[in-house]
Length: 112
Image (cartoon, rainbow, N blue to C red):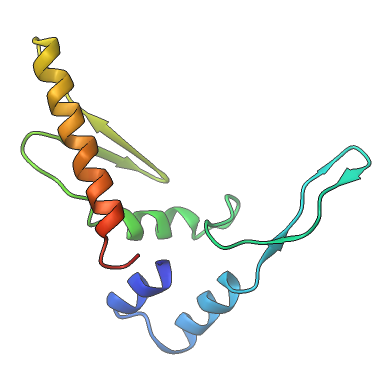
């Protein structure tokens, strides 16, 4: 997903290969006390301690749908949908509209 977007935005050559190498073949396990889970392959997500994680998150959501009815606030690795209205019913409809747009974007994203 991120790799497809990187290609779309023109990242090529060695830089692309380095990111691809980092994201490919990753594995993890969980340990609690003396108990350790089996090793599993990571098929999605980025390490939270990776310095490029926030940049890749912004790259991923930069085409999040927008409208004059819904406002998104994006910061580092967070996205917030903001809406206000004095009428609770209208507010619920607007928020549902915004969330439906986000879900449609996720399900139909060109790069997924």
